[in-house]
Length: 349
Image (cartoon, rainbow, N blue to C red; front, side, top):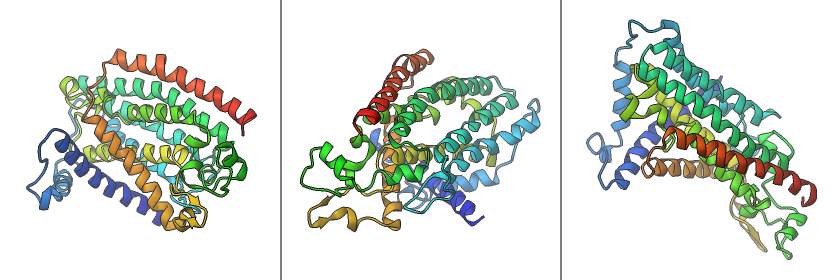
């Protein structure tokens, strides 16, 4: 119960930080100031917005399906929130250390699509149903290349246990250091032991996964389910007050969740990026439970920052461009990465 409350509190705090950070990032990119009035440099603006949402009236449209409309925000948020349960935050520190953690995460967050469809259909609004259908088609499509990219890592790691995948990206064995050309140093660790360096084709798999994660999070340039210029706000057009807050909270939680998954699978998880170099044991000095939390958070937040940067840089894709990218480019490349992982595991490792 305490862990569940802690994860919920963390989701809320990250959403507060994420909304403020995105406002400032967008302002910087567009050469303006962003929120400045509420608190010093506008740091209290997001808190003021949350208070406003808390006191707003919960309106149910007269023609809406009442139960679908009321349940959908909770289902959308809970599906994302439960995904954090299997994320290893550090060595020996995971809310639920199950040996099928990766499978569990992608099974549970897929329920978000159901909640989005319920929101669109239950609103009985043409903009909402169009947004929901777009979102469902987009998420289901981009799960294919994302799944192939993840399987590429699983074939190298030979496990679905995220804690084991994390531990494998720690100190390198002598065999790995020799393969990488580091003949005189063993137990190097650091950035060279990350999956994208242990098997370099996983760099491509990482890029594919990251692009697909943007689509799964409905982030630009894949934000056609929420296209303001076309659909007002998409599937959550009719939501007010706390129901809208839960949808918004789910979006920012999803951003952090997919970034943490990317960090665990490709970027060394909670392991330090600093190597051991002879008597200078940087990896050993920056390893431990507290250090692990710091490293994982830094990697995930860096990816979240890139997501925000992309949103305010690239234009929105058309539906045909979205599907062409998925089925004609990302899916074949991800499938090729999966085949290479099989060969790599059999002949190289």
